[in-house]
Image (cartoon, rainbow over all chains, first blue to last red; front, side, top):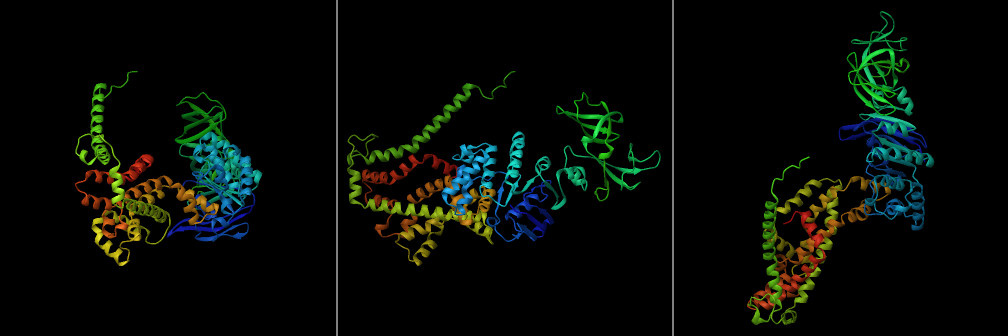
Length: 355
Length: 280
């Protein structure tokens, strides 16, 4: 177990810089998820921690030791790859014990450690099988077994669940989380799936175009995103954004956007009047209310306990999730009221949150 | 629901299939008949050689005994086995190493080296046989196993095929091995070589057969009969015994037997190698 320090890490391929000075502190035993859209640099960053990519500039330390120039095998890390990267010609047991064999560990001890890891992961009966004879979930477990058998300082996961079906993904998500919690090994986990990030992480690092947009706990990112990017990336369905201005002219504080007038209970703290802002409100923070604003239903997606609606409100497209079963047809009017306390305001120019 | 109508009627399909089978059968007979004829003649008495019977009236092994006692055919077979097996083993080792280097290692001039190797596909042996002969003579390898083996190892075909195959191996496998603590050599030995076993076995068969049947190069550099390979031996034998078809066919049967046995044992791999390499 060890802390990881990334200090102003830069990665460039020739003149093309893809990671622009990333700094993150990962504490001992943390489960940190790097999340962001494709091409944001999260996998590159993970591969730099693993030692599979050179670091152009900056300092990377693991357990207080600078490891910039150390080869992967000397970093005492283990990595689980997206496609598991199991050696197809080796049995499950040989796959799991390969690193120990290379490390010169005696055969008997390898057998003992592999057996112990296999028991933890429920793989004991599969040790003599080849990867080609396993299901996706079993392969995933073997890949994890290969990682834990070495008892590394750090686990690195590179989108390990993306090849699994939705149901198995949920199961494996819980398994990885509980395994990490029981082993207490510092873990860096890369995903583009914000649900995975929210459900698994102690700390999320949101990345975009080679930069860190925000670091924080899942709920902190959900409730108080620093900017429009984080607000839109974290949370599902995506937050509604309505550009407009806040004015106090007339009846009181009001948010204006074209024909849409949303009276506000009070002037949000820090929001300048008569200035372009972006109002952000999550789909979950609306409720049906006879006194609300009328919106026309365009797409209705019942999911059982909830109903997700795509609506049009005064020319603005809205996504709303109502925690009820709703008998609504396309074209029906639905009166909706937002939760004013949950409204976020972003500066229209910088996209940074102001309230 | 109505089924969509077939484009061809059942009888039409049967006719086409019948014609296809007939053509295949004719081609198969044309291919196999000379082989049967060879084997049949090898067992015939000299007086029966030109009889039209495919099955000899009085089968005899005398032709084989004659070939083995009068001509040094065992020696030719031994030489051919040594050369074919050596070339196959050494070539596979070096080809797989260079294929891996060209596919995965980063070094200056990699593409130039690959393209240069690749371009040698355009040149056949007769084109370079004179300079190759001068080179081998200068190196003092005329009339030696080295002269038979070493030039045959340098062949872009295996390198090219293996490189293409290695490019298709997921890079993550090697990266997983790197993280597990493997270096280049260990990755090559413990991961790449075992993974390329199917292709290597196909190539092994191809290389072995090619060298077993080699004629022009062994003929060019060996004048010492002790170093002759079977194809050279049989060619000389034909010249010497041009009227004795029973002996020539017995010798030919002896030469063809190992390749036939190889074919029977490794049919599947040979078919795979032909499919993989796009030959024929």
